[in-house]
Length: 322
Image (cartoon, rainbow, N blue to C red; front, side, top):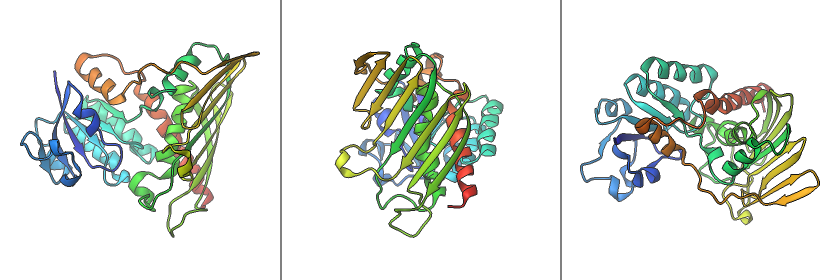
């Protein structure tokens, strides 16, 4: 069984690379895309139909799944709902919604349409985070009491000053760190507070340059996140990520953008964990789920809870008016 996939928009991490090498999915249509931005193989051999509008593309009966990187992230929840109600499965860039009512409306549409919805939520299934997830699940750390997560990207002039375009720092970057807490450290976030700043923004506009979150975990523990657009070229990595998980029996960390890990258990420094195994591509997991019926590694509620958390974090930060 092969899934006919359509893409809408290129505002984010569109799945063209995955499609080019996937045996059970192929690109059949595009909408809202400048064809000059597509690889040559997807442009004009007739196999891929190109539409101006999403609604026109949804009338193409070859389309079974729509991958959304909507031109404005604030419109993406409605784009997802329209696609689901048109009888298409949906795979959506993060954040898939920017308010809790919009997120709940997506879930309702998926239920009513009996179609599958997933966010591009594979953070915990890249290495070394997949190996860390497995290490935590083994119980070697004991009870997880505290988690620290960092997500740092570089600033560049293409970063939109309008958060409606990409979701803004707290939601589009911070959701990765929230997934570290929930999907890697295995701890569901309860309450969240956040503060953000425009300090360091070289332009006049709404771009927030840094944010800090404080969270109560449902197991009684605590967690904190820092997110910013302050990663420097000298890091030699696009993302400067850190993750430290502190338990009653041990500590596990990944630092410097995932290039180094360390596991300490009691008085034993076990050094690097083995993260040499293959990552699990989340889009591939979704396609396999559709074609073979294999389970996704997360329930939809587990998958989307970090998105719900960062929506609440943004609301908390916005109340401060900074």
